[in-house]
Amino acid sequence: MPNYEYEVPLPGMYIQEELDARGWSQRDLAFILGIEEPALNKIVKGKTGISIEMSKALAKAFEIDADFFANLQKAYDFARAGEPDPSVERRAALQRVYPVREMIKRNWIGANNLEIQLARFFKVANTNEIPHIAHAAKKTDSGSDVSPLQYAWLCRVLQIAGQMPKTAYSEGALRKALPRLRALMAEPVETRHVPRILMECGVKYVIVEGLSGGKIDGVCTWHEGRPIIGMSIRFDRIDNFWFVLRHEIEHVLRKHGQNGPIIDAEVMESAEDDLNSAQEKMANEAAIEFCVSRAEMSSFIARKAPFFSERDVVGFARRMQVHPGIVVGQIQAHTKKWDFLRKYLVKIRQYLLPGAMVDGWGQVAPVSL
View 1 (cartoon, rainbow, N blue to C red):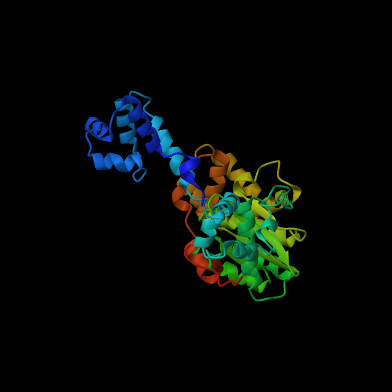
View 2 (cartoon, rainbow, N blue to C red; view 1 turned 135 degrees about the vertical axis):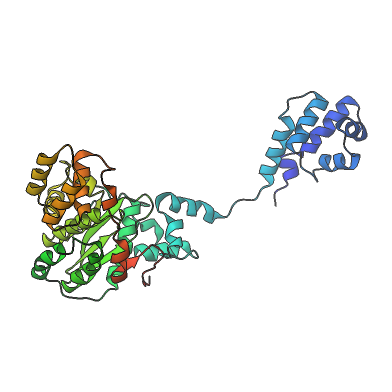
């Protein structure tokens, strides 16, 4: 144990020096300060620390800088303080990169033996091998970096998909399923059939609630020749759900993501972005045509803009055999009027989750690391 009395002197030593310089006794100073002598004696001997208030009082008594004794006490306390647990620094380093606390809260990992838990979660030998901690991120097929939040979310999707039943994938069955899926778009409750239809085609469909700030919509990837579609349902809206789902299905049909997962973030927001990769443009175009034919939508906008009546929107949606919210979403994207007929952007998650493999919103997928 270091001898702190010699490394950093007791603040009380300086009080005694000031007393000696003035020829005062501790009783004299106690009188000046308006405190009992035993209380002052404890301060001089270091049994009691010098508070900020006492530091100011001593400064007045000795006619010195107000922060002199406060700084002495701070230096003394700092020198005496023990070293923090080494795990504090490591936990901070991990939390700076990955949302470790949120991952614990959602039961993705346990709180005990944190580094072992994280290594198991990311399927590496130790935490130094986790992407973003020890080396640069890998690239997605679309060419953008996978953020740590997205990578953690992706790993959870893969864990869940890995424990789902292995069914043979049929591209033909998936193509034939598109009209069946399209027929579900008129009523929000019909989204409940989506997980079953995809499973019948051999597509593993997983819903994982996104991590805070991840802005991730979906992923297309493959494992052992079988496609996996993961979605976050980041926006619980009928238009966003169908657009993202059809976007990911197109990736599957074109066999995108076989050389590495394609993570899609802010899909609808970037649907018209010329900077998208060729693969993303293909998926976006398929999603647009699936929801509402681009030609039909353009014709409707040209005829009705800039004033779109609710009656016209509902009638057009009925003719297109989709829910009005899907048309409203398209009009909002075109006009940038995000408050237009928002009542039709209905929620679908309540219908979708009961029949799907889900992790989030209070549910924890039965996955063992």
